[in-house]
Length: 258
Image (tube, rainbow, N blue to C red; front, top):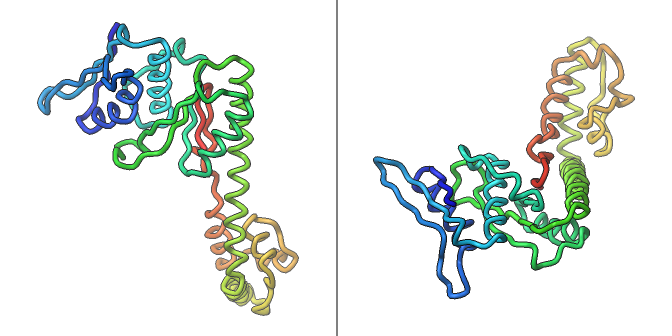
């Protein structure tokens, strides 16, 4: 049986270099079961001869292709779900996240090293020179699949909270600038609504963080004050730093992204 994957020349070259060739190399260092062909006029493709590959090789290749589809870096390919029902692929865009995947998520699910392979894939569609690790675990039982999926969700939530904390810490770390800026905006807002508000209204980094999190502050709970354009602009600008990243929490059966 053969599979054909079509694309532009750079896409095919990257796919072979970072997924197919590493998996299809035999003990003699020879790459078997894949063949690239095509031209600029006719287009490019890679042919995968599954008859020349083992079941494990086919499974890992399909998991790698599925990861690329789920990540939005490979289009026009429909993964065979029957081949990857016992695999899980996780992308991780930093060394710290790779460690979380290997030690915490897969280690916690008691996946042996022999059933784990680390490859690379493009960070985003068309970014063939910017790669991120993709960790594929295969030959998993249902308990391991469930454990990995649950742990991935927990890790995603933990990373989101950590990122929020880092941003909040950055604000508190530059509290002098933040307080001055917030105080000035509050003062201007007060002028707008005809009130007299001192520059030192927002006094601490904690209060600035509360403002970021859209928590009402005692000093800012006056309806007239909150109507001021400068206060509203400030809240909207700072709050945008904490917009939810939907991609960061993307999780489907057999695939997760940290």
